[in-house]
Image (cartoon, rainbow, N blue to C red; front, side, top):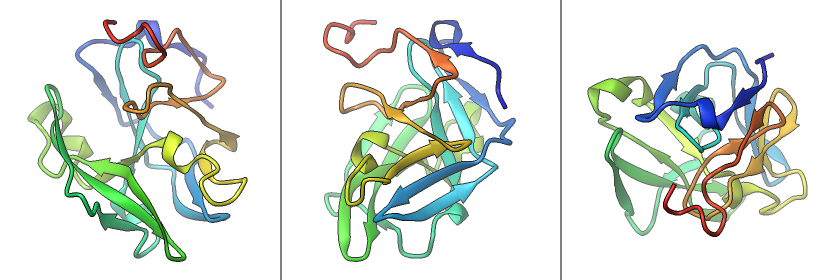
Length: 166
């Protein structure tokens, strides 16, 4: 189990934490669609950690290219492409993203995908959400951010109204 952390102590530019060891899972439709102990965390000042799971941790067919072909660019990580999560015929649009060709400092993120907790939290079934070591994650505020808030990480966190300039 990780020691308590403060998002205020995370660096900028962000850092990649490949220590892993935490049991990370994503539940949609009342079932586990991804599970790993090899997640990578990206840590950035005022952001809760963003967890990236190996693509192979997802059940077959759960990750499908986003219908809208959305792409974004991060000044640190590079160009991201998005996935819809599809479970039992239900499609959660842009619920995950990946950096297929990340910048050299973030090359560990290749072949990994991050999941947006706010999109999956309670989406179909009451137990739907992202979990770290059995704890259900609280989604980061703001709709744009994909941080995973657990009891081990303290804020304040960017994303709430009035924090856009942080």
